Length: 325
Image (cartoon, rainbow, N blue to C red; front, side, top):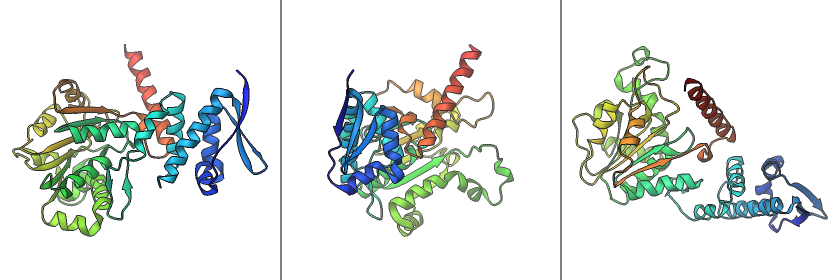
């Protein structure tokens, strides 16, 4: 294959600087991922390399320029994601991320899906009465669900928002923590508080809590209830038992929507206990109006190192399973 040199056709210097990143960190990701080199000549920038690779690099820059012009952040995570899509021939899928706005925060920040997987997840929530999402940390499962819950309330589609998670600890016993039961479980519910406060502002969040419009409680508090006219989110569902998740699912009342999230690589249940989430995804997979979305390390939107960590643990787990077999 012949080597070529092609110009990067970005005239706006601010857009170009955003794409290249601080100390060219974004550019270094592009050149390494797509095996091209950068050449600067008379104030203009060129990619050099095999023809197909150069074309991919230029296409990546074009997509990143669109993100920048739309006011979206062009960070290492996004650059890595766009490069991965380019190598897999899936750049066209990215176009659907440019315009879709999931929600708007209290400060006017636009919340958009950052990956195609996230968009599938959001579409599943909007389409189905019950949505189940399985994926690693950092894929936006909790944050996007809370954003959609707030949108549903503001549109008067529901009367209240209920957020819950099992009070299962990773290494520390609840009984050793200070305070009453609510104070003991507050640390487990912190991600939900944070997401709500960003969406509503601290004052708006506090008012909705006081009025009972937002309810945040441990999963055990759901037993015996019928949850109607509500947007209900069960977070960290990998730490539910089969009995608990069945109990939760059967709380569904009229005009309600449920979202169930979890990461099956971070199960903190006692040895020998099966994750209710794992079982539920198998039992419910073919039932109409129940959507199941699987997110992967590709959908991680935190620091790029999180993607590498998730992948490393996934490979280690696969090796462990193969050795057992």
